[in-house]
Amino acid sequence: MTLQEKARVFALAAHTAIGQKRKYSGEHYIVHPERVARTVAKFGGTEEMIAAAYLHDILEDTQIEETFIFAEFGPEVCDLVVELTDVSKPEDGNRATRKGIDADRLGKVSEQAQIIKLADLLDNSEDILANDPSFAKVFLKEKENILDKMTKVKDHPLVEQVKAFTSAKNPD
Image (cartoon, rainbow, N blue to C red; front, top):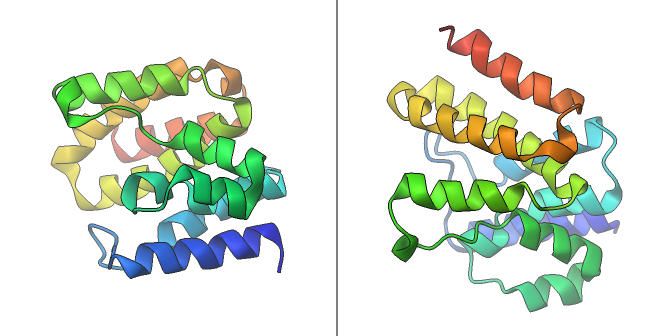
């Protein structure tokens, strides 16, 4: 079994074990990491990046700990997953404050983690814009802030895809 296959199987089990579903569609949660992983692969991601794409929500959404990810998937995948995990906590303030903290941190992570985050933003944008137009306004502002901070990927083709998707769905 390849590293990315192992990551997919693990992500499926971890998200299924807690009964996690996609908010709007009710689909099994794994559809999101699968789409993120496919996008990362499409844009030339390494096997470690694709594995991290499958696992990118594990530390935030499940009881799985960083030490387990390190032991099972190695230091490179673990580092990427940690870089992609929000660091803000509810006690840090309101949503805008927390998302600002997380955006600032994303500006400092590796280029590889930023590419995975672009794929995540693209998939979440599609879902939110199609299903929750009122929240989409909040999300789009947060996304703009994240894109502004992620300077290591400012010329990556995924940036334009994320921006183009947003402007096509929500013209000013």
